[in-house]
Image (cartoon, rainbow, N blue to C red):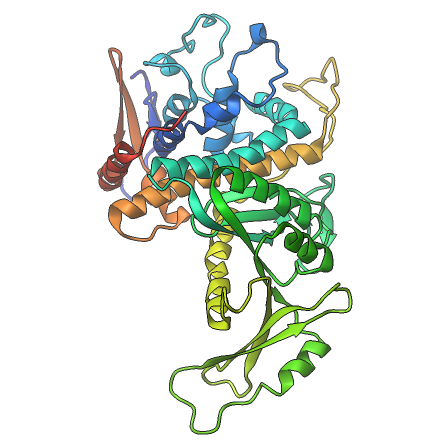
Amino acid sequence: MGEKLTLFRPTFNRSIQVEARLERLTTDPGAVLLREIMERLGIVSWLAQRITDPRNPDLVTHPTAELLYTAILLPAQGWQDQADADFLRYDPALRLSVSTRKGTSPLSPTGGGPSAGRRPQGLPSQPTLSRFVGWLATPGNRRRLREALVECARRRLWAQGRGRLQRLTMDVDSLPVEVHGSQPGSQYHGYYKARIYHPIVALAAETGDILDVRLRKGAVHTADGALQFILELVDRVEGSTCRVASVRLDAGFPGEELLSGLEARGIPYVARIRNNPVLGRMAASHLKRPPGRPPRQPRTWFHETTYRAESWSRPRRAVLVVQERPGELFLHHFWLITSWSVEQLDAEALLEHYRRRGTAEGYLGELMNVLRPALSSSPRPKGHYRGREPRKRYPSGDAFGQNEVLLLFCALAYNVLHAARVLLEEATSKGWSLKRLRELVLRVAARVLVHGRRVTVVVSRAAAWWWRALWGKFLALRPMAP
């Protein structure tokens, strides 16, 4: 496919020669799989019809859907920086996956289409993606992106034949997103010992999908804005995905405003509360082992009571959980508060329900460690353009809102990856992490061949079995309801 360029010969083995050729090689063939998932769920088409695009239609090079596919696929494949779009601009698998055009036109020199004479090749450039994030930062467009998270979860459940759930548990937590610079709203947080944003996130415990995420300033309290966040999300979830939603909270959230707000709406909750001197005195008489030789297996016992903090308007059900751990002299204990009655969930069932929160924390850990959100937008004026001083300077826009858009795209990319993970787990009857999914299935060696009007993506033999297993699950997905 054109000239070859000999780069070097390694000294350890003179039989080896390293060359560069104009071949259509890629390490991102998994973008084709992820695009197929998005196509079958129809989530990008749904979102593209609802966001506001301020561009002049006569001057548009990349349609809104192509920009959305690019913004979701790049972080899903592990490319965090928007500048990676310039480096990957001619990657054949990514060009095929983000394009809304059919046939071989995404790989043609001019891109094909009615405006081929002025259409640049490849993916949208980094400046194009930056402008895209800029006009998505309006409150209305950000609201649509948040709604797309719930819609993506609903469509996946429908496609897999599960339909609307009777009950759904929402795990709500806060996450530190470290930044390097002076991004608006980022602040130094003493607990994390870093300059961070402090977003709040909600995840569906039964399905593993992210339901909502909202960016917050770095030094805010864990529960800041949590009530409005939860109430708005419950309205969206109960309107589309489930009939009854409940909430599970960490120890940083319980406060009078949040608890009374949930109770006023009849939203069931369970939360852990931090130990304090009052709770310590209440627990003291119960921190004793039963008489007799302790068994080999650790034991857990409970104590039911009510508790009212000074800032609370009324007493609430509290459950003391006492745990005996092997090799430890002292007993471990903590408190749970809940709006459920003993008849609805006894103490043992309540603890079992709260312990499932660990699964959600694992999913959120994957969001931070596999997607690794990079929130880098800051109000810096452009000082150069292609090595020269720009002739015209434009306002930088809402940098805080742009960083929230980047975080929402990471959440959407997580949901698409999670959909692929769920299908692969069903096909193989084995558990898969997102990291393992990306390394063994999505980021593998591949070659793209063009013959006539056909495009063939040739993947490595090692990944072929996983791809075939996934395709079988694709065929079993139900067509989306209009």
